[in-house]
Length: 500
Image (tube, rainbow, N blue to C red; front, side, top):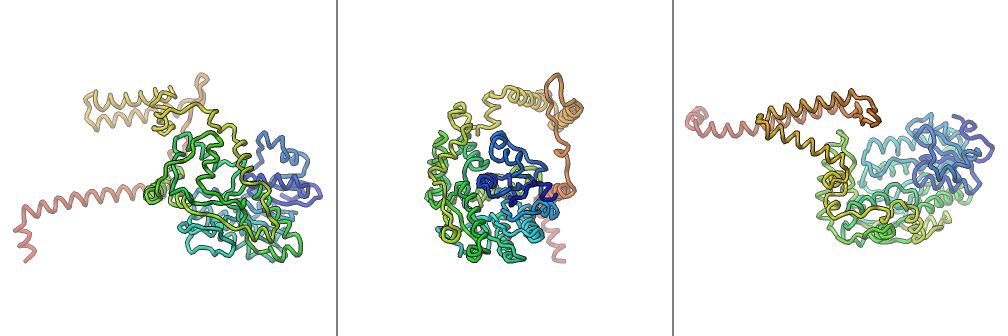
């Protein structure tokens, strides 16, 4: 896809990779509002999908007027990246996988290999400036807290997770690329981003609050954090680009890294409490020592690693997450202030106010009151079933329990016969369900995807290995008991054989 095809026009084009992400959307809007740039939004989906607010806002208008364009590009595809960068003067490289997914292969392929492709495409397309969105986590070892760290802090020998490790590798690549064929680069490290449009922090807090889980504090609650309002993150990127665009600015900023924060460190749990209280929920108050939580987190992580291949969802309670919630993480913005001219344009107080106001649908008063029984049951499917909130679900469970009870205890079958009949009924149900059309008398029939029954060769090997290992262990234990019993019975004979 050539630049002309992507957007048209004779103005200055910039590209924002991962342009449909949380912080990237705010940067795109800020660049368009400035009137200085034509913006090409690059991201994975084949086409851009705007929500109602975006359609009526500056991005929708810019797309209709040709001041913005969309480019579908996978960073792991060199040709797609080069096509997206064609004719661009500046690239803001913000794309990255979800940091909560601790999948090294995923992070390496996107953060490292993808960044290599970004750099190569910048040089090939004669891009003048590359601003990379890194992370403060590149200096966090997962053990020691960080207090007012500046950019002289070295990378740790061991990182907290694969996301941090690969972001550090990508950062090194970007800094090393500075000066290659006239390309100027720098890296921005925004700390703990929050604001309107966030789909992780606030929604997960509210989910926890509605389930009665937001009352707990991990650690003693005294750890400080630097949070950064999303508009300030976007502004930090703009400041970096403007600095690199001048000869004097390029001399002092090119090839360097910069921490970006709101410059208002706050206790981590106080920040969370302000959001929860602002939305009408109870603030956390019960403190749980890290020493108590960490063994549980290790067990949860082990369980996930064991069963992830079978579709287990990524857990929230992991050792790396516990460390992040309980330690200090504050950073100095002196270098960004002195060299980029960065100052927060939105205060922490105003940022919190705007964030809370942007989630009216998550306000506590918009939800029905939750009973103590529902909270005790986790306020999920179990609560809906036991408390008869979902009549269809409750009746289905009762029917299944009745069938199981009938076959196991009422019919007089042996256990093996009863289980065989239950499995037969299950197979019959699945067969009939699979034969049904998608719609029966106006009722939609939920279908099980074929992928639910697919087992790869590797998974089959793991299952077979687990079964054989378990069988061998059981046989070994049985033989141990039989061996000692045999020795006790024929002790003299065995001893005579041994001596001879």
